[in-house]
Image 1 (cartoon, rainbow, N blue to C red):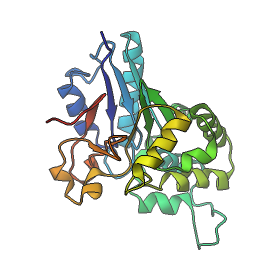
Image 2: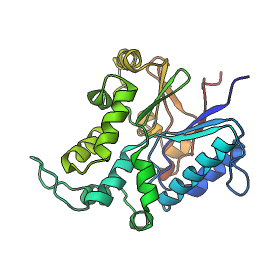
Image 3: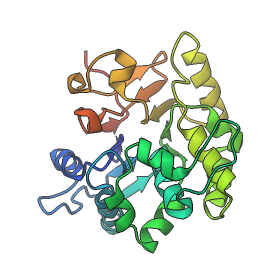
Image 4: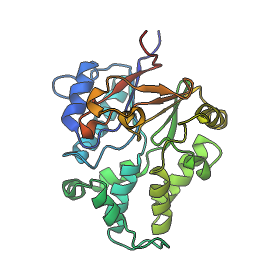
Length: 266
């Protein structure tokens, strides 16, 4: 019997909406504890910023990870660009980034992009260590999981393992310019849109492995030109090779918890 596998899009500090959605899938109980048995649950990043309780989301997922492992299941998380921003703000604050494009700092970008002071105040050493050791790329059966719909990952390595090792090494250090480069690269998007999308997706899949890319980061409503409140399902595009799962929760859209594999209803 196949093990149930799910992917979760960007949460952005909306802990209550997340737990409601997890409860609807029977993955957590009324006390927000794991009840999903041997299910596999993947979070694709952006736990923080723009919403009221990013650290609450982090703590929930850390706890669910332990509980799921004890139950024979698994809860895993990939880093999103907003985790890089949160950590960069924590480590470097308003330290000026070397740039030819005017003043740049993590503090400035964090504030512009919905950073919450309550999250910074609540961060602990355990949170920092846990976040800093998460992966950027992973596989769930035939799915290639990543946060950002970008080709920039490929500049960090030729395999998922190399990409993860390269960035984790940067996050273990204190090179402000290297940290900023990770943030900047992960903010890019839309690599799989347009007429060349299927070909680009194929190239990524052939290099990193998998049959379909699953990503967050780019809100489905922006892809479709509609309001997030109209989103009801993930967005399958690029000839079925790419699945976008960011429902735009911070803008009133749904918290999508997507079973993998996913196919549109007839």
